[in-house]
Length: 458
Image (cartoon, rainbow, N blue to C red):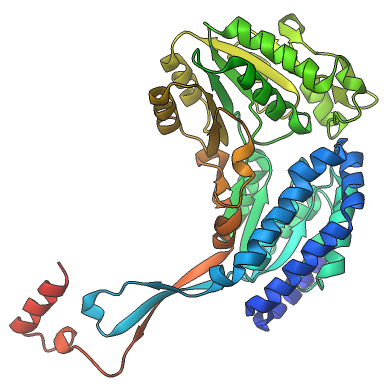
């Protein structure tokens, strides 16, 4: 396995050194081919997502294939601009010269994709890496085999393997890949595996982007529009059956509106998923038995306000609300990553802030309020990767803002221009004229030269 991977990477590095990916027109050609291949295979991709995660075609397009097509469209329209040299100002002391930043790809990059959004989180970083001029080894998740096959089919129809290659497998393949020298590593997944990726990359000083996760809080104060807040929280929390890295992990709500909020959340669960969610054909499933059993272990039956039922044969768990969850409960000790929503109350906003600050930095944070001063305080004071005010999740569905973690929830960002930048090194270059050569920098140093230097450098 190690030898095969090493040979694959060697071929990709040779392909990169040939200079073919430096041509922006070549990059655009392949991005357009990829866009068409995805459009042509939408039904097969959606069927694969249904098989792996129980996703409906509507949800698959809204949260996976449609977002990838949007990202591709963005890159196709702007790659030429992004790849052009960027002029910058030149200090007077360097007269006469021109300064610019030259976007340059890293080379052979490794993208490790997760299972929860197995198409989106494979194709989005791949799109950015190709747009920036790199070759890519794409490692898909063993937990989503049907989607992995769909990804490989699309990629194989578009790219030669020395340009983009898709690899399958589990932990052993990941380990072999991390023992191979890449020029850049992009990883999306758990903190546990992220630490290993970081450690292995550090050994060879390979730059990395880590898209991890965490317990993303959802703070709801007494000024919020409670019915609308509940509607949006339920949508974002139970999207993909809660298996979303930026899903609201738990709700921190003011004691003043606690009863009303729980009532509206229960109302919205029934409205969006029906009285029997387990029989809803558009309600997905837990990825595997291991995670299914883990989630059942987080449900305290004495605190279930609604839901709690499950179907072991189908690996389905109802949207479940745990009312009155305590900070010491099992459900509050780890990222839930499933359809279980704890609701915790606070007396003052300062109490809510103190609790969030006592935890690891989350990937996302959500604030539901109409108090502008409070919104400003919470979004400024709390540490988190990104988030929303009076909504959830949607901050990642745009190519115009970077998406990424902060501190324990990850390092680096992507989407749109930020994605292009992630896979790009900017060479700072000064082009000096041969017509003029200021003498002040040369020895022997003279007092009048010192005066000139002090004039320019102040």
